[in-house]
Amino acid sequence: MPKNKHRKFTEINAFANVVQPGYRYPVSDYPLKGQWGQKFFYNNQPIILEVGCGKGEYTVGLAKAFPGYNFIGIDIKGNRLWTGAKYALEKGMSNVGFLRIQAEHLEYFFDTNEISGIWVTFPDPQLNKPRVKKRLTSPAFLSRYHTILKPEGSVYLKTDNALFYEYTLEVIKQYKHDLVVATHDLYGESNHIDTAILDIQTYYENIFLQKGEKICFTQFRLQNGN
Image (cartoon, rainbow, N blue to C red; front, side):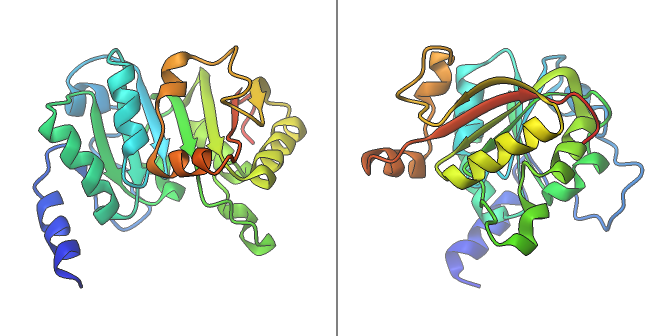
């Protein structure tokens, strides 16, 4: 293991804002399940997840922009989480945390109706047909989100991949979810988008924009268990 990566793994083990269960699955009694507000954030603010958060840039950006909410970035790569977690600690941000798990196991760590919103930002589109179930807006994942999301909560997607975006719209239509906003050009058609969201951009998002690529965005609410 490279020295830098080893250092990050060592440091992240001591970060108070990072939870690394390290459990074998399934987990039936995880102590923070249903208790993230009271036992991790120590408040009753709504909780928003970013699934597949990478380095946590967007999680941190959302936490800055919306201090009345709590945010949890989820990723399995500890050396990635280190970046956002370290920044949040250095800035004294109390409304942001990180959970190191695979996204497939969300239901083991969050209770029914515990989450108020879910962000999916620039995920791997998993374009190979055998990996469709790995897409973070596949019916399998939306079913997982439905389990933990409040009825009025939304799922938000930002992606530079038009095929993945169109796939997501087809899933929304097929399963009769409630489409709130959909645009293939977020920064060109931003009339109905919160300006704070437009101001939050990841490193790679900036690269895409500098190349003239369009960013797709959708917000939708889940209407059933699929």
